[in-house]
Length: 115
Image (cartoon, rainbow, N blue to C red; front, side, top):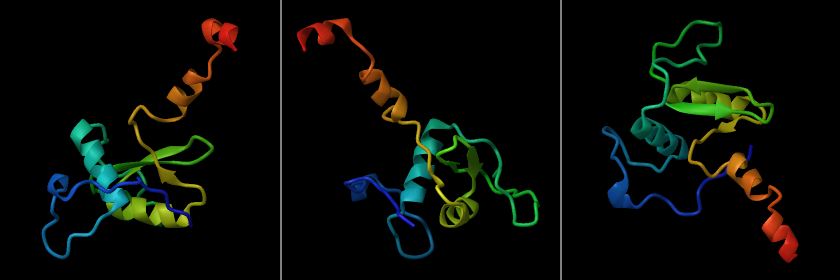
């Protein structure tokens, strides 16, 4: 498994302390907090249990894979999926993804004339 993260951690004063236990940096928790601030997750986890049972926990993070499949999950099920589903990764909606990257590569007549 390869896990990618940001180059710099969120400053300590900007982190939300989790009650009960040591505070640990978690990329999954950081993603969940970003989604929470935007208010964009569905009400319940869409991953569910191993035998198809529904999960009553709130959805906190969005996962995706290279085929374009996406799912919203609670922290426990998202963690399980990231470890067990090949090619699964945390999906973000920060505006810095593949779409903006490809838009920058669109043919621009003014730039093409300069080159």
